[in-house]
Amino acid sequence: MSLTDAIPALLVLADGTTYRGWSFGATGTTIGEVVFNTGMTGYQEVLTDPSYCGQIVIFTYPELGNTGVNPEDEESERPQVRGAIARNICHQPSNWRSTQSLPDYLKQHQIPGIYGIDTRALTRKIRMFGAMNGGISTTILDEAELLEQVQAAPSMAGLNLVREVTTPKVYQWSDPTIPTWEFNSQPIANLGESFTVVAVDFGVKRNILRRLASYGCKVIVVPADTPPEEILNYNPDGIFLSNGPGDPAAVTEGIETTKALLQSQKPIFGICMGHQILGHALGAETFKLKFGHRGLNQPAGLQQRIEITSQNHSFAIDPDSLPTAVVEISHLNLNDRTVAGVRHKSLPIFSVQYHPEASPGPHDADYLFEEFVQAMRAARHGATAKVS
Image 1 (tube, rainbow, N blue to C red):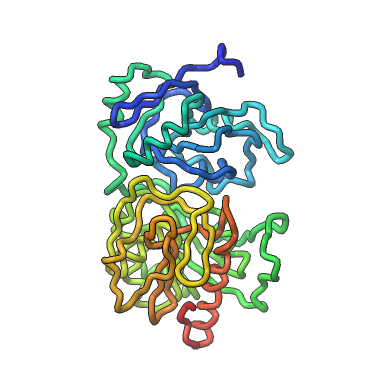
Image 2 (image 1 turned 45 degrees about the horizontal axis):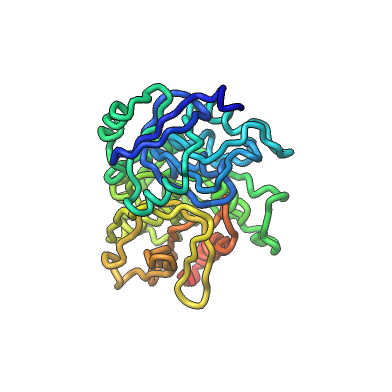
């Protein structure tokens, strides 16, 4: 596409900063929290990750769309972002798996984007002043008019977005990671054992479900507002708390449900939002990070072992609020020392702030799915099921 054919677009931040560029994807106006992702690959997985609901994502990699999009790489049924920001856009992808260009894909799903702006300067601004609301528009090109709409939008703090992304009905997931993409060099078979896992869907990614299935789990996915009695009626071997968007403190139903599930003493594994929900259920508090962690190379660890992890979150557990008599910190983010994992001291209950399914990202933390299975196996056979 030549610039003579391009449609002008305007980006306005809540502090009044403006950027003018060109439209890709859908036309119109969109407003959300502006955040940045530093990953060099996996833009389709990012765009379709339900954890990005309510957000406009800056991609720091300078060109987007080279490999197009395809149905296999979607983490949910559609893009979940409010908008996308890029330095440059490829309109003619070249990849054997591509079925559609990125601009056409976003246009199909009514997601506006803006390109042709200085994404380095924009990212530096967010790093300095923090994530803030912003708006992209092709129809409102007056800066003051768009700023008025941006400033009227609610803050991410206190916002419950889980209800926008959770499944409306119960379903079963059984598809494992396809053999072409299976990265575990060791057989994952569980010696014929099958484990029933109820996954509470706060905005779950498909590749998390695939990893659970790869480790021999029959996964029953339930809506976020499912009562604990109904969850336990499935007689699960373990309970999984998924990732999701928004402020975890606002997901009060999920917190109360998790508190009740703790009483069952069944193995529980949480990722991202599920980690934060579990923290609240155990008595901790969460706080909003300045600009969050969104990328593929976040180091996490505590003793002896360091994992390079994929992360995507705005909130973190306050370490001073953790009830140290019953729970301990298992991992720290080694960039800023925020809590990246917790573990119950006596029960098979643990969680991590990052994404061990690594879609996109490194596979260092895939062993956590195996630990979850080991905890379920130990609990089934009446052994001490504390996670190591």
